[in-house]
Length: 305
Ligand code: HMG
Ligand code: MG
Image (tube, rainbow, N blue to C red; front, side):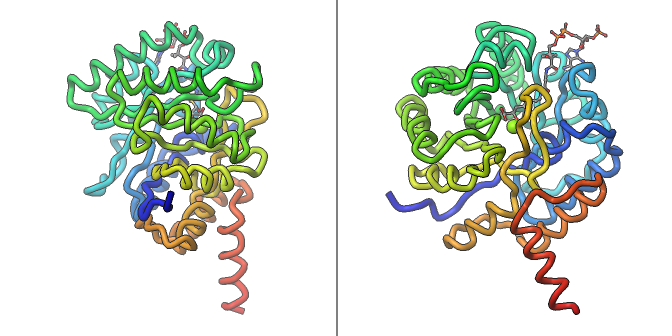
């Protein structure tokens, strides 16, 4: 199969990237990050999470963030909603899109959501129904689609069954997450092939954390099967507070560089994105986890010298 001509990148840095930061990131930095990312040409940005501040204190300013951003026409600003309470607060802050996020293993579901998979599907089903009835778009994530920090291997058939459940709830897309970044390309393809038997490949997305440095290879393997939507995080920020040892998502800069090289359109200005990655890394006192961002930065320092 030929590779897609165009890829939609869902920038998850402001949410998945920042949620795990120990020090509180000031609300105005979060807002500036989202606005800068939109100015780079990213048309889908996950802005924050309306989760319990007891569980993820970093996202406690969710309403201020969502209300505070200058929204750019044509950009979708999604937020996580774990329950109806989160959905209500998200709507009150002006959300137009929410994401629901069950897991493929019982242990991770308990750790991340404090309930079983079946309970989470009931809860998320209610969120999806209410959100859609109110005219919001709903995206689905499936955590641990390629491995679990507590249970290890996860059967592709189980992942496919849960992806189909999210599709049946009316999610316009199901993003399959390698939460702990353990997958390799053939394994990724086996999982995607199982899912594509239940949900059209056009409605599947890849959400690959880069813990073992395999995310770009897995992304390419997904492109080969026709997947054309990928989640990524500027400067490779992030990790899940309930997935021990997991690092950030694949860096958006690295994804754009790869796709540019393949002649696949993304609409993203790589130079501007790399500057944004350096800026947010400096703002939160981190080394940027993007090889492309670092390479572009040292190249521009050399040419300026
Ligand atoms: P619980 O403790 O079972 O819920 O948590 P509860 O209903 O008993 O509520 C406990 C307290 O939280 C109460 O406050 C609620 O009011 C409050 P209290 O009465 O004690 O003062 N509360 C809320 N406050 C604000 N907004 C809300 C909300 N809900 C309850 N929406 C719950 C259950 C689902 C809430 C909790 O487990 C939770 O928030 N989990 C989310 C954890 C999380 O955000 N994890 C990271 C994001 S997921 C991720 O990173 C994976 C992903 O990237 C894909 C991948 O890579 O795998 C998407
Ligand atoms: Mg994630």
